[in-house]
Image (tube, rainbow, N blue to C red):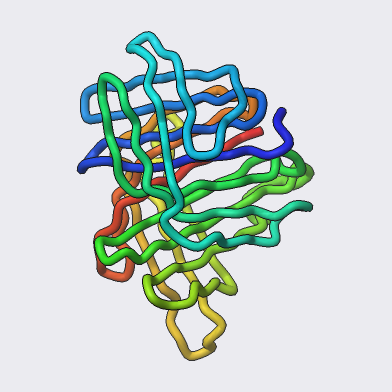
Length: 231
């Protein structure tokens, strides 16, 4: 298992989705559209900003660049880092659009859940939930969340909650966010999401259940995703 896990999550168009997970041991990716799916791998360490992959459909390349400030959550020994990106994938089914880059700890947890939602105005909400490896359920997760608004300082939530619905096949299909600030008389911010497309990847970092979600964030529509990485 790599010392750090890098997770690239991005969307394109109205239904397409790309996800890349890996580290110094190589990487695995899935590119998903309305009626197509490409799974690809690379055996070389992930470079900063790009990775060349191999698949049955050719040799797609995923590239990304920062599009926002770096945030850090005090989760695990070395923390969790995340920032907004602009990403693209070339190949038979090219796609490009907004996304996030997660820099995650490789050890000390049994599962990590990541979620993000971006509005047309540029607001970005991110959430990370890590379940310690000796825990028994979601109740022992360490959860962090923050919101980034263009032209303003990012702010965090003191009590972020993430609830999930699953279908008969075990796929996460709906999610609800309840985000409490430190203002006692302030109602929590809420968001609801629904799965559009997704994929499962067996990677060196663990099993990744990844999905693009359509979000409603405080009454505003948002694009984004929700991934579950099980060690």
